[in-house]
Image 1 (cartoon, rainbow, N blue to C red):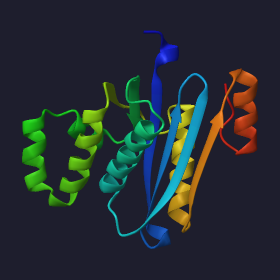
Image 2: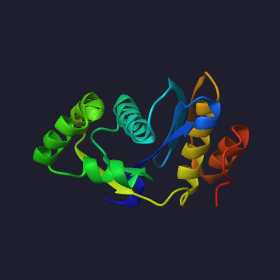
Image 3: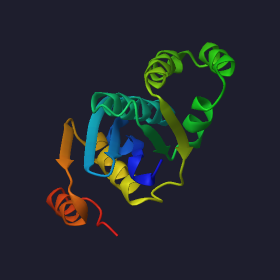
Length: 175
């Protein structure tokens, strides 16, 4: 399978104490011809690990809605905690659900989404280490500061179209 066949998802969560603990998520999904970006305000009083899990959940949900469940998907998150938990075997996740009851329903929903994916890899990346993760970070930050949600989708045909998309939506420059 070539790298062009891989769908990449970049997720990030943001909690802004200065804004009364408002939480937001950012998701960027990209394959060889499409780029999808989502920023969503989640409301108040969520801890960062819960926010990061919800970002992962939305990333998987959107990938399925876009029809990518039969493709190889790599989901990138800067939350080592979340990636480590989700890469545990199912027995360990069940034990964790008992300890962290607040994560139980999120973990169950993520597991249901994972079961629909044919080839999914969850990968930790350092914070803001990739241009599309920086975009997800920006979307999460913007969403956490306001009571709004944004959803953008662009059909990309090559490098010039991608640069155009980036400039239209004030996203990071394509290298």
